[in-house]
Image (cartoon, rainbow, N blue to C red; front, side):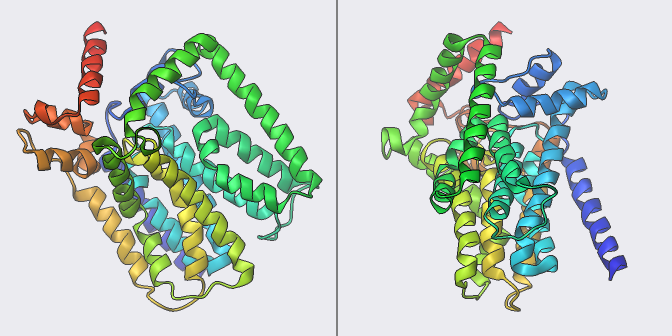
Length: 413
């Protein structure tokens, strides 16, 4: 049995590494990847608001080991993805057993979204890692998953560390975990350990963010940059501008990317065929809250590339593991979902220009997100694909202004 496991793990790792090697991008090309790379190269420690200090620091760590700046950022991405996959295996194992948990973890590793972000150099890998860690910490703190802590109150310490890490990799992810954290607070409202942990973690998060603001150049500079970002993102927000062509397009992208990236987990949820007992309702609910917070934040506010929904995958995996359980139904469907996501990543590539409108939109929302585009460092927003295809009249007015600003910045460099 051990030799089978060793061979299976070796083959999976080999295929995963080979897939990533094929897609390994030679230069920063995704939104923000260039920013993180320049910060590592220039020995700066925070990026644009909210700062992403832990992701930038991890990039610095690989830089110290002698890697080039972009390679350092890419390696930070890969390490966070692998850590998130391992934590997700730990999440699933109590509810569906070792074999099925391993299969779900493989599903996460070979998810189209995971394969994409693992080598692009984006802090969204931190979302995948920190949400998985937070879910593990919550289940252990509440005793839903029994464990033997290394020292007294170790589970409370783990919860506090998870909260701080969640804020340090991407502060907005901690905010999107709000529904989950509110439910945790309600369930533990009489536990002194929870409130002490929350107070200490909250103080650490505030201190960390004050340091980020100082490193960015002070509150005025940080606030101005935040407002500028918000001024661009607002047009994608159903909450702030209502149902417009742009905000509905943002919602469509969110559903599309979640559907493709979470394919094996949706299959497990639908085909699990298992009634969930009272003891399993808590992990199921926590999984759905972890998934729902990210999905709602992306769909209702901003989701400009698939990395934005990466943090939803661990919660979806946890919920799927509870519903799939130890039953025997539809086992073959899960590997089918895994292979489908993998093949999408390996085979899709964008249409060549000149384009029609339909092809330009397809390029922007799906066909550019694959191994071939990564290998050639190709990325355009949908508006840029429309412009490349000679269709400037189809670009929304707010995006025309954004493109003009991008052109000005490019000319000034």
